[in-house]
Image (cartoon, rainbow, N blue to C red; front, side, top):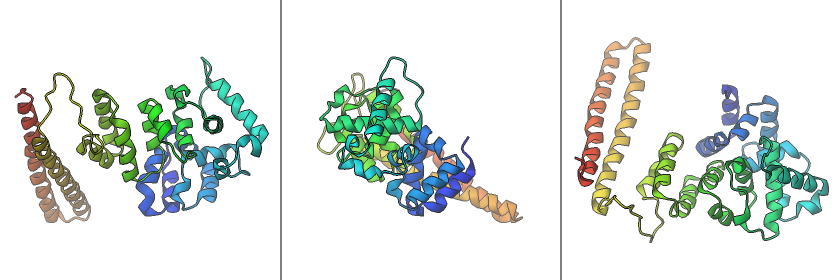
Length: 305
C-alpha cells in the first residue's frame, strides 16, 4: 500500500500546477509507483529530477534504476552500443529472456533494459508490427514512449491497451492525451472503447468526459454505428450532453455544500450546518431529475422506454 509520505514529498517537489498530470501518470504504472514508495529511491529521484515535470517519466525513473552515470537524453542521438557496449549486451540478453515463452517477472530495472533494447531495434528501422504485444510489456513501452521523438508509429501498431497505458503513464497535458487518443480510438471497436472510457472515468474523469463528449472521433471522420444500434441524431446527442454538464455542476455544488456542513458541525455551528445540508438536499433532488432525464430520453430513442 502506498504511504502518504511519498505523495507529500512528491507534491512538495513538483510544481502545484503540474500535480494532476504528473502524479496521475506516476500512479498509472504499478512498477514506477512501487519504486517511489522506497524513501531512498524517492530521495534519489527527487535529487535528480527536482521540480521539472518533464523528467518524472517512466523512462527517466527506470533509467535511474540501472544507470546514474550516463544521461538518458544522450540515447536520443547516440546508439547505446557506442556509448556503453556492456550495457547494450545486458539489454539484449534481457530482451531475449522476456520474449521467451515463460518470461521472468517484470521489474523496473528489467523494463529499463527492455526500453534500451527496443530503442536499439527502433534505430535499425524495426517493423513495429513485429514488436512484443503481450500485457507483460506495458512498462517497457511506457518507458520507450519517453525516448521517441515520434511515438505515433509505435502507438498505432501496439494493441490498444498497451498504447493507452504508455500514454497515461507519461505526464502529458490533457490536450496532448486527447489528441493521441482521438487518433487511436477511431480504430478501436465500440465495445472496447466503451469499456476503456468506463475504466478511465474512475482514474481521469476530466479526460474521460472530453473523449466521450467528442464521440472519440477526430475532426472530419464519421462516427461508427454498430449493427442493432441506430445511434442518436447529432442535435439530440448535443442536448443529452448538455444534461451531463449540468450534472457535473450539481455534483460540484453538492460536494462543496457537504464540505461546508462538515466543517460547521465540527465547529459547533449547527444552524449553519443545517443550511448547508439543506443546500445538499436540494442538489440531490435536482441530481435525480437531471440523471433521470437523459436516461429516459436515450431509452425512448432506442425504443426501450
